[in-house]
Image 1 (cartoon, rainbow, N blue to C red):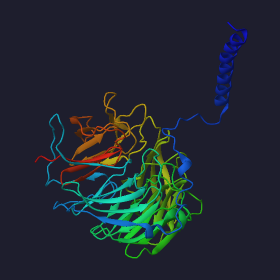
Image 2 (cartoon, rainbow, N blue to C red; image 1 turned 90 degrees about the horizontal axis):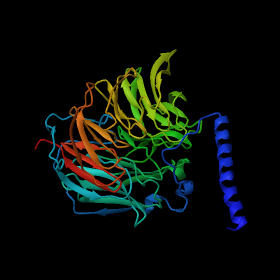
Image 3 (cartoon, rainbow, N blue to C red; image 1 turned 90 degrees about the vertical axis):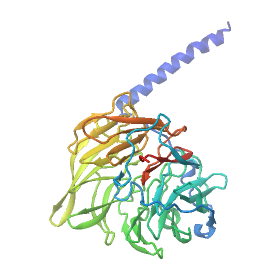
Length: 470
């Protein structure tokens, strides 16, 4: 054998070993432990967002009317996490089936979607979902019939979005008069939900200096008393927009230059004051619903990489926060001191005890339900004092999938589209049924339930299931 080749073969493993020793030494000397991120974003498409079009994006929008017909089906799921922001469906007039056949609940309709995790909102027999058309390179707010999934209208505008763990991931907000969406690159549109006619559009990046989050916008818009409540986290931290006119009613100053996260705004009333709670990049803020002033703020809860779950209002001034990247969880208590509202930490939990990477926990009958992060991935039930009541066991793992509680039942799906039904009880993990309802992957989109119809999706397909007893 050539002597030079022999020398090279000896040098390579020695050099590799030396490099490994150096890396371990640097790791050991670091002030903070090495953290492995759950996912790594592609940032090449983020910082250039919205800079190609000089014309206002609303001037480039197009409305396409189709032949779908709204369903004559009562009930609504009008926004992210439902009417009461709690991800709970209650309708005793439509009983839900406690068991399914081996094939699973009947599929009423199925629809191909652009890549993403955007869940639906439902009102007046219409399903509203924000999609992305990769062929046309357009955001698409689609209005579908709840009866058969046929498209009623589609509102589009051109925007280049590269695949980055999917594109669209927000849920529209809809009332009888307005539907508001927030696109991957932070375009806000307000339309007539019946006709699809545009009232106004805003480009948060261009108009308010928003920085698009690492995996595109995940904040779901809120409509409150004909006002769209949005957190640009650019020049203003939060703002209220008049739905009929697009006029800015108030803006909250962003004194700390906090940036937008994937978390959504949740309303709360405390000490006779209505407020909006938002997890920004540098902390949490409570903003007055009346004038946009800051009622309280804290940096006791923040996640450096990405904040995804939204705040959970527990009651009596308590708010629960959780997230991924080993952040764990925090329970906070709002208190009054000298006519000021002050947030105080009640307890903290490590990620291993109770936390959620992606889905917001559900508070039901005083107990919190959430799927813990890797490697555990079990559904866990916790009391409001931070004590774990039960977990689903190592044979029942749900990865990053969504869950909803309906009439005392938990519907929970894993990454592959395996849907599990169980009792929503603190008495233990009581599984009732299970079926493979989607054959894809990344089944992460938030669920919606209306009149016994369960809407759910994976990366590229949405299905409507009949989970009622008839």
